[in-house]
Image (cartoon, rainbow, N blue to C red; front, top):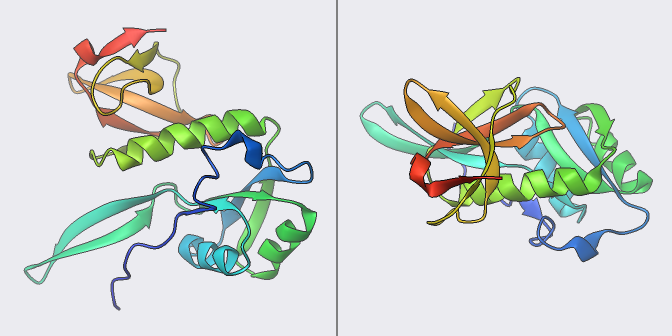
Length: 184
């Protein structure tokens, strides 16, 4: 099976940055997809020009002595959709969606996803965190992640910055030096 090149993970490109993309008829939805169908539905949505976000991370491994790279969904089976009812029906028509969950606080989700996108763009190794526990809210003071807000975690003596998607009760964390953080 060939390893595919990186595909578009957000459409339109400024979906998570630009608050003016809030169309009156559109709302955020979290699509729970059939197993291993996240990238396929993202391609379908892109073809139909329906706004979506699929957080992808680079995964490296060895196969028969060769270094392989692919891009895998950060959250298995989830795609974030910004659509009206007609566009949602088109997503259902792909026959790749199991469940569509409406998001009550779309602006909060957009902020969480924007923070997550920035964390992925940093290129640092990420760890997916499930079933989050409450920790100290912090902001990064310096470095490439300056201004990013999240929660402090400690794992095996290492300090990690957790960026959460509260709607899913999941997130991703990155190792960070504690002197770069300030409490909120």
